[in-house]
Length: 265
Image (cartoon, rainbow, N blue to C red; front, side, top):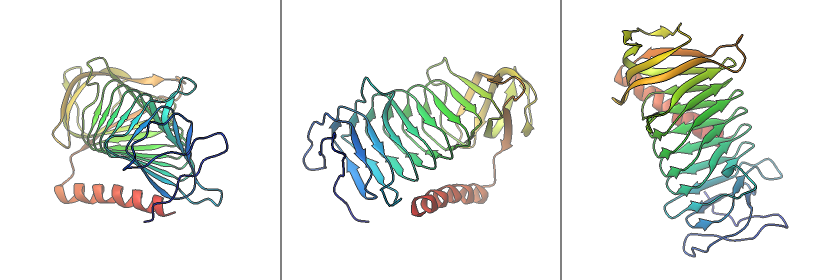
């Protein structure tokens, strides 16, 4: 793929790239349909969106990237349209968010606040640290195979499928569902309030959940609640067994293929 120049609107400041680690102070917009790499300090938030012709833009954050956000925004970075953010490394002071039909892939780095998914966005988490919450709303979809969530996982209308990683790592987190949201936990040895549960829908509205995820990560006594938001639309918590190794590889390959297809659209 080609590496294009950074396009900014009139009130933005042109800056970047790898071999010239400038300190940037601007509201930064990538919206030219190109491929960009961020490896430096940015003292404001970054927005990634499609070009005027509807071509998705891709931004990759690598080692050395530090995004401090701004007092006027809750986000350090967000992606909209059908564009793509890949976080390989770096530090983000505030939220990282995905809107509309965008893609957010988190393989490393540190997000010191929340990750937020909405619209029809797709988020893949295979590594890195999210210090606070992971939230999915609307029709967004999240697949988590690794990484760490410091506090809550909340789903309101969206869906999250968890095969690995750690959550409630700070010791104060919970799993919260509402407004028709769906969380699927893939693993074994699950129990609620000390009582073993098998695969299928969890009927309890709340309780303390323990178990082992498909990657071998275990958790214990995590509070879950299914009645966030509209009490007439409780969320759904599903326990799924660990698939056979070949099936698991197929599932992971399907996630990667989905990412590739959505980037190509």
